[in-house]
Image (cartoon, rainbow, N blue to C red; front, side, top):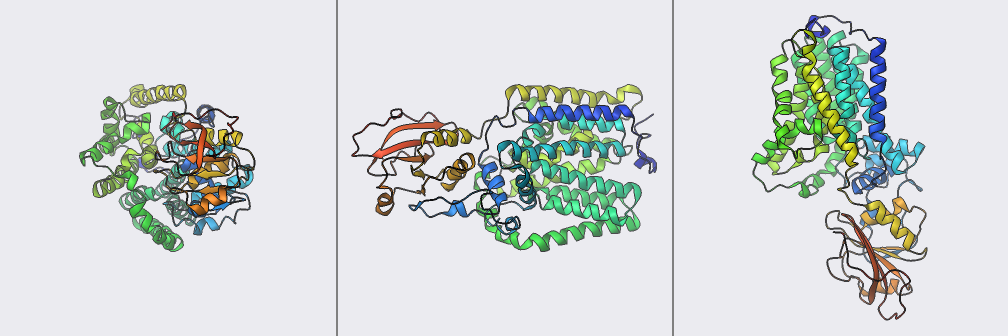
Length: 531
């Protein structure tokens, strides 16, 4: 049997290839392996700001008010964060004017947290479960469009790919984005196979709108779906499908459009960190390297760029006559990578370098890699088998290395501070130059010490007389921020007696009045050991 014979869509048949009992067993085994890979060391590394701020805290519906507290004012008790006395979930929709994300992930995460709490394990489980569900949906798509064997190959690659493991252990929207995007593809391919029934059109429009409301970088994928429908469908099916996609776009613009306008300023000023002074050729090189990132999780090894790029960008064009479903995945990868490439070239940015931003294109890569070659016998599975084996090796290396800790030890900072500070000690938070507001340190502390209602103060510079008067009644305070606080003591009249610093996040300094001759019971002052 040739690859073309195994493709019912190409042959005009409406019957999907029949599943056998061993297909179910293999799929269950893959899901068990995937769960082990994802739950292993799930909470070894604590949340970092993009998790405890733009996911967990924003899902409380409070917006960014806690980051905008005035400097030099002592708050006792401090403002509540996360789910303590949180507004209703619909406040999420209206509270995202200063964050560059649509609301759907945060709304769904809020419902999850209402049931399971805000611990690191529970919030990351939401991403983990979405990742495992994506494996099932990808299997179902490839099974129906190619064969059960190809579906299992695609599921195996997605199960083992290090990028999928890394994304599934963060409280971020990217695994949900992949799940919703795949569900939209599933609905589109069902329309192609069985016709544009009202239910299938509604499902397509719903999942397309949900994908758009999960992340702005889904635009390239949605354009790919529209292009595929225009190319592959005919007659009334094409008109109805494109109309359904247009209806989804209208719904998104009416429901979310006014809030996009509120975020407009953030698009211009909030992405300065993504600037890139390198030549534009660097952006082109990142686009070529993206398929290797989908498989192996990083682009450090330049020797593995060529083969994945050929498979993603050229192989579908060669096999499209016998495997027409490859057109969707080729458009999918080209749309996602191409849209970000255009942004990078125009804005001199480096979004293509951020793995999570291109991650939506990964399932398309897995579907292409799982497609058997158009040759007879077992040899047609050579390429998918080699890819599964190589990705499996990369997964083993990823588990041996453990989760990446490049974002710092924010949990260690908060827990150590909670252990050292007494119940009534004020905590003064100093700003981090990258993350901005000193409130980022307060959100970290509040997440890991939610019952510690200590007085807090933000400082964005040296404390003035009014701020110092508020702190005067206390005999000990804690200064929390980057290391060091620009080399300047922001609290005149106070001296450091001890300090502790944490890699890539910051630290705290124990401060007592300068005229206090008593020595602290804690460790003597020390030089910072972290950045």
